[in-house]
Image (cartoon, rainbow, N blue to C red; front, side, top):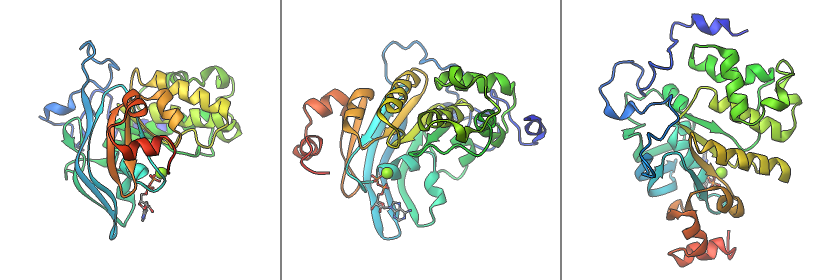
Length: 296
Ligand SMILES: Nc1ncnc2c1ncn2[C@@H]1O[C@H](COP(=O)(O)OP(=O)(O)O)[C@@H](O)[C@H]1O
Ligand SMILES: [Mg+2]
């Protein structure tokens, strides 16, 4: 069912596509970061920055949604983004893999670096970028296709070659869904429960073996049991992936994240620190007021 992807002239193998550019030729030292190992390189506790924004401004027409955001997101940790509604959390997330390209009104200034390369440079191919930076959305959005084809979808789109059966199984196992669906891979993804659908979407996002997973309120449409499964899964995934999760649920941020960024109204990054520090002893009064529920 997946053979047509093998004939795609744009197909690239795993070992070829470690750069963000359309071409396989690169001398950029920042793009050889071993996409396939899933290891932190045995560097023993050192944190490496994967995503960095500098002076990042985003406007929708005349409205400024992010103001001069500077942040350094560490590898293989969970970074939570919290803040009141409308403060730019989703906007920031969408900057990272250039989903804002799809919004006509959006304009971006400043830098958004991934592995040291500005993703807004002219030579960056957004399709290649999105293979390395996958995304999971708020409402589970499986396609009206089989479970198998939902997971294989990203492989097809990206022209990834390989043993699809093995890749699909691995992604479903990593998404903690395999045992529940292994005997019904041909049934529709839409027949699953909400929580299973969201884990299916996570499997779809990780099948192309990205480095980073962006999640925009991935559990906010789920019941508490399904939420707890997704939270456990996110913590597991952070052993292999850099996870950036937007959540309006502060307890969730406190439970699952290593780092927390607090955005406040106007699109300003008010504070970014270890999660314990943010929740126990934030630097600014405004952040304390927000996390203690005085507004937002
Ligand atoms: N596509 C869009 N067009 C115009 N304005 C937008 C668009 N998306 C978001 N905004 C505005 O940008 C600001 C930040 O929105 P958003 O990033 O969605 O915030 P959050 O995710 O924190 O709720 C809000 O004022 C919102 O109305
Ligand atoms: Mg949002």
